[in-house]
View 1 (cartoon, rainbow, N blue to C red):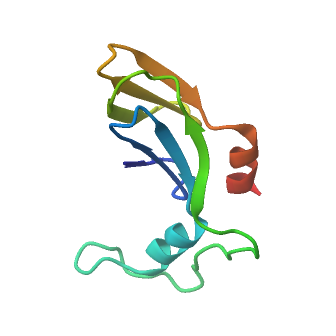
View 2 (view 1 turned 30 degrees about the horizontal axis):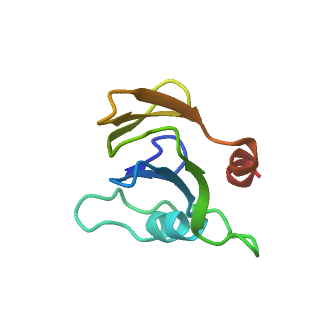
Length: 109
């Protein structure tokens, strides 16, 4: 699984079932942002708090991509486009996908 380097609530995962799943995890992202990691997190800044979680924003699977025909063993987010990621499968194909608009809007709004 890979967290989006641009948007903490987005996680993409791949597996042997030939699927790539995209998860929207606002609660996990908010909890992670509010919980510093000992000895590695910068000191908390006064007045800086995690974004509030809106009612109805639950963690869960947002979309499934099924373009592969064999196990998916590689997954990477784009370093240039925050909504783009690629997956690599034993079927020999690299598939580039975009985060669907409905998921994008959940992250941005």
